Image (tube, rainbow, N blue to C red):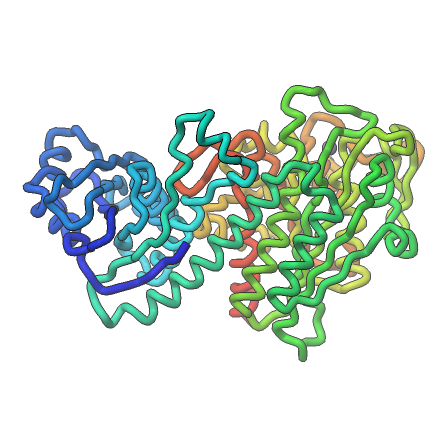
Length: 509
Ligand SMILES: [Zn+2]
């Protein structure tokens, strides 16, 4: 889909749909007032009569009955002006274009909803909202779907044009929209990888997707396969993979934006369990289909590397995805087994369903000990406990550095991928004490997200700063409800947070 930026007014737009942004409890202004006049005061009348409230998330679409060149109009509520923030612009853009798509529009126009924020920031968010909002995962629909189901999934928006008032804004807004498009497309790439079923997304197929992306975008790329992982002593990673006929892959993508730097640079690490049956500690069958998305952290890592390669910050970034399938095959690892991780620590397995932290243990040790990356961020659909604690709207952040956690909080408020720091008191670590090895892999139900984080932290080497993002709720697998630019199923979190972190880190150098 193409996104253009032009100077113009919605009342003159000659496409087939326009989206109009409306603030709550006030008289219409700017282009919204122009559209209202062309429609004979219908929008203001609807507002005055409370037929349309303009509350945030409320929107409506209708035909313009020949009163405007565009046949369809969507009005999008922004809520109260004083409560406006970046994510409202992102969602409004998505709501508007989706409402127009539903009415059959193909070429649409919208304006940038703003109140008191930097225009370029809002322009970028608007483009992100359009690209992410229009995402649909339909690659397994055939012609038969059209015949079988009466749904609105056939119409596609071909182009969206963002109209600005002033020619002096064009250059900066176009650059911002281009950034937004790169981020939106990366986010959608993460969603595709997450939504793909596990028979089409084994560890090797995930590695293949990452290789294609890396080659297209000029990234260094390699895969640590089973034999090489054995040489590195990645016994935790290999232990998880041994019950599956699908071999594991430690996927490594390297972006060299600052080749003269002596430092390893930023490390982004994703859990890439392409299917999690729980292994011998088998999960209940209800909802198990959602475990195709247990590689959402890995998907976001691959997608973030794509956007970073395209946005070119002056910093080195390495993305690592620990991809494996957790299956109860005849060779599967078992409760009571003791595994040897890459950093020399031994792990007693008391629950084979706590496998994400095992593959991450070796990935984090490889990143910090072997590649000397610092700081290191990992994203993982790690625990059900974080869903209990924070629901689906915030990611749990665990860190050995409070300033790093604070940065991630602030980035989340900007990207809409909201974060919340969780405690890491030493006492929680005691739950990981094993009778038989250095650590056991599960600390039980109480504080399960925290003990999971402590487990991973035990594999951070070389004093690296580290943060762990438990996205089990926010990744949306099975839980996400359609709202604005969030679609059903995989949300793509934390793709844009990873990218924004890299951009900020480059700016601070
Ligand atoms: Zn599991």
